[in-house]
Image (cartoon, rainbow, N blue to C red; front, side, top):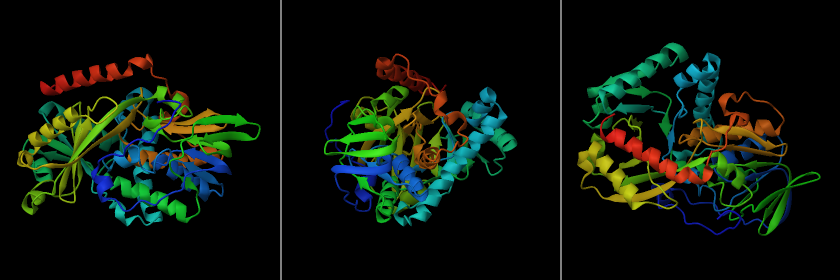
Length: 435
């Protein structure tokens, strides 16, 4: 649908059903002048608007749907200080200094979420920092997880990492299927849509203009800066920020970024509220949890419901087959949930990159962007808003592997969907045979 526009449905998510009422933002019309026009009212765009306004500059935010419609309102609400590329892999390929800088960036990203929740008083975000358990499904992956944890403790100073035996993981999860695991501190969970709406509401109360249902159809240069054209008006700005990530193909104005991303649909299910005795048995420490399979599943408990998610929902729409596969996997881990109905099923797009890390920088001297969070975007996109504001001011933050100059376009882009299916199918096969 590149180059045209029509409103798309919202996700049937637990978050949408339990979120605070959304502020009604106006539809953009007429002409507006600003220092920076921001395309996209997700975490990246709103965090950028906040930090730009703090600098004394004037941002304006244009959202094609409603704030939080995209990945910021559809994710699992997991906050974690990591990249899809491990720090040990970064160290092996790029050296110790690069690994340490990426480690600093990762932990800065989790800290900024806490800062923003405090700054705007978003109590409904229900932010926790109780840690995350990586639960191993066999002895091979457990040894690898322990080896990685020991390396992190030795080389990165992650002294609080704890190794869990089978009994420890059983106490953590209430499940008997795991052979052990690793507990990482600092990670946590959040109500992602309340977090997003809290940011949007707080910015609006501070006078930052945010417009909904105002897609940017075209970005063009003029003598003094850049012009963002919407169906009902234009914004004249000195600089533009594209903050649309995997939804960059909604209009032609942002579609060029799509060729740097492999959109991977992630599906999530949420159960009915559990009986109190069962809710108390499963995940009693209220941490977040991942498993070690290649087609990784994650899970957490929210308001006495199990939320369970993972990759593998192919295509452009929700997939009943993907939801059925998630339910089967969930019951395999938690047999007591076999007769518990699902209350919500939803999905959204994850922006994957060739090198497994996000990228931030400039498309040209007037246009900036940040994309490619690889499934760990709640914290990282919040941080990228701060870095985008620094770039707007002409500063040069140390971006390490995130520097946009390292970004590569996806080769054979039209073949990306069958390629994703093929790789995912191979991973599913390896998981099925226990490899």
